Each structure stands twice: as structure tokens, then as C-alpha cells.
Image (cartoon, rainbow, N blue to C red; front, side):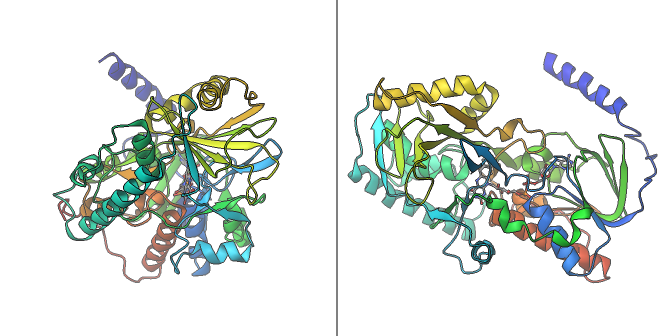
Length: 475
Ligand SMILES: Cc1cc2nc3c(=O)[nH]c(=O)nc-3n(C[C@H](O)[C@H](O)[C@H](O)COP(=O)(O)OP(=O)(O)OC[C@H]3O[C@@H](n4cnc5c(N)ncnc54)[C@H](O)[C@@H]3O)c2cc1C
């Protein structure tokens, strides 16, 4: 109750600090009205802008809250290298239609094909507990699990969804040892951002088979660098959208700085974390069917921690798994010191997900370094050197992202997918969280940005431009 009251107070302060937030009156835009406003300059927004431009629609602006282009694709300097804070792998290399592959080849992007079976496993007493028999048992079970998920997703989409934990039991697998929990973590939490209990069987499908880990010092975003060369001046940085008013013939947005922009159409590319946070005030308020879809496509958390050491002391394997008594306690380390990565760098990379990711992202890097060192000392003994530097990605703390990616809750139907993607009058939606097939991945952002820009172009050019009728949830 107390926190609700606090929220109310914060909200009313927020209301009074924004110009003309409610009612029918809204400040007149001093800017010339545009054909399209694109909200957000991540992969989805930039792809949408390029698609409009290529189709001859040049009267648009891209409004981006942060001071850079790329959103969740961002490389930062660390210990003499540029490392990726967000997306790192190009997934689905086995798919011929993958649009990222020709771009990777065009820029000759350097990287490494991850080998997920090159691993060892250590426990909290430092013993090597690599057990290939349990691993192969897990691989057989997980293959069946993914096949079951794919089949049900295609043929038996709700009402009969179930958590993966139930499906695993049906397949005869129980994660009842630290080693088994770690194997399950690697295929579920590491891939989907949630574990056995939270992951929906019907929505999981097949995991990517071949993944390319980008090490290129120009950064992952290089793939998109040519997309906006012709219209860089249309991308306005540091424009924090706080209010969106949408109707059947226009969309007006108000920024934190009080600037007002309007256009015939707008495309939101905000993450599920932002959409579900009430940071943006929509007028009229989002209808229930849209809000339900947004809450179902919930944000998940994945924290990347890079460590620099004076020398390399770890096992000679690509992946060093940690079968800890404490679940989620730095379950895997990725050896970046290897040939193909950053040889001689003495860099190690670890990941935490879910609540552990939220905990780590809130605390100081010093405390995180201590937590990782405690885990590594259990695995390798007290004589290992202290890490000399650390970098922790903190996307959950970034008000313009608030998550790593999106994962649908158990029981989410195709109707919810459609409602997540459906337009509200002249306000369209794109981004990773809107994709029915590639949510969570860079591809999802790219495909939805492209497709929604085509829809908007049709509307502008007088082609098919149907209003959206909310889908039945049970389909
Ligand atoms: C740690 C991490 C690891 C990942 N690893 C991979 C991976 O290996 N492979 C993979 O394929 N994908 C990965 N992803 C997911 C991938 O990065 C995203 O799916 C993709 O980049 C999303 O692009 P987007 O355009 O949909 O959203 P975003 O990149 O989030 O773009 C939205 C933009 O909107 C802006 N914005 C937000 N609020 C406002 C506002 N109020 N006003 C104006 N602008 C605003 C944001 O600043 C942002 O630039 C990872 C993500 C994270 C965080």
C-alpha cells in the first residue's frame, strides 16, 4: 500500500512536469509535421528508416533517447579490446535466408563459430566433474524437448502450454544435481533468459544451431553501419519520448525536453522492458488487449561480465561450466584467451541470468568482482591471481532498455503475438519483442523494422492499410 502511494505521488509529479500531458489539448509542434516518426534508433528503428528511405519515403525523423545509434548492439572498450555489451552472436547461421550473413560477409566481420560441446565442468570443491554420460543423456532429452516444443507450438498452440519443467519430467529428466542443473541452465536460461519453470514449452522451438561470436574490433553494429549513411541527419539523438498521443490521422510525441513532434504515422521500437514500465504515457491509454500482450512478452535479464587477469589459469576448454551448489552462481565461463578470440588477452567472460542478473546489475562492480573471484577460487584454489579489471553490462538499469530481451510467459497464444504486433490507429510497433519467430534476436528487430516500414509505406501510398482488429487470445 505504502509503495502504491509512493508511486501515485511520483506519477502525479511526473504528470505536472510534462507539458499538456492530458486532455485534448496538446502543445502544437513547432517542427514541421512529418510523414513518419520512428521512435528508437536500434536495429529495428534503423532498419525501418532504411526501408522507408529505399521506398521513396524520405519525410521522416528518428528520435532516439540515448546519445548513440544501435540500442542493444553496442561495443565498448575494455582492457585494450572492444567488447560487445549487448548482442554478441550472430545466430541461425544454418538458415540460408538469414539477412545478417550477407552483411557479415560484406564487411568481412571477424569472429568465431562457438563450439558448445568443447567444455569441462568443475564443482565448488575444484574437482573436475565433467561427466560425458550425463551430458549425452541431457543432449538426447533436450533434443526431444525442443522437438516437442516445436511440434506443439505449430500444432497445439494453447490452451495446452506447459512449463518446460513439466515437459522435462515427462521425458524422464529431473535436474536434481548441480551438474544437471548447470546443463539445463546452459540450454534454457542462457538461451531464453529464464529457466525450466518460467520457460514456455510451446514457444521454445529449436535453439540456434550455429552461432558466430563477433570479435571484430569495429563492433557488431558494423553490420548496420551502411543502413543510414544517406540520412544520418534525420536521426536525432538525446530525444527522450515521454508521451505519445495517437489517433486515426496523426501521432504526436512530447519529449522530456518539452519538444513536440508530429507525423501522420509513428513506429515505436521500444523494448518490452520500456513498453511494460509505464515510462511512456500513451493517450489514449493502451487498451487492455495490448497491455496484456506486453505483460505476456515479459523482459528477461542476461548480464555479461568480462574479467581481465594477469595470466590465464583456467582449463583449456572453450566453455568452463561451474556446477555450483548455489544455482545460477556464474554457471559458465567463456575463454576469450583462445585462438580465434583474443589470444594473449587473458580475458574471461561469464554470464548470469534472471534474478541473479538483477542482483548483480544493482550492486557495485567491486562487489561483483568479489563474487566472481569467490566462485573462481572455489573452482581453482586460492592461489589464482585477482582479476585486474572488470566490466559488467547493466541493461536492466538503463531506463531506455530495462532488460536483455523478451520471452513469452507460459500459455501465450498466437492471438497474443498478433496483439503484441498490432497497430493502434496510426501508431505501429516493431522491435525484437514484436517478432513471432525471432523474438530475442537481432533478426527479430531487423525483420519487424523492415515489415512495419513496408506496412506504413502502403498506408502512405494508398495501398493496403487495414486498421487492426484485436485477435482472439485462444488462437
Ligand atoms: C546482454 C545482451 C546480449 C544479447 N545477445 C544477443 C546475441 O548474442 N544475439 C542476438 O541476436 N541478440 C542478442 N541480444 C538481443 C539483441 O541485442 C536485441 O534483440 C536487438 O538489438 C534489439 O533491437 P531493437 O531495435 O528491437 O531494440 P533496441 O536495440 O532496444 O532499440 C530501441 C531503441 O529505442 C530507444 N528508446 C527507448 N526508450 C526511448 C524513449 N523513451 N525515447 C526515445 N528512444 C527510446 C533505445 O535507446 C534504443 O536505442 C542481446 C541483448 C542483450 C542486452
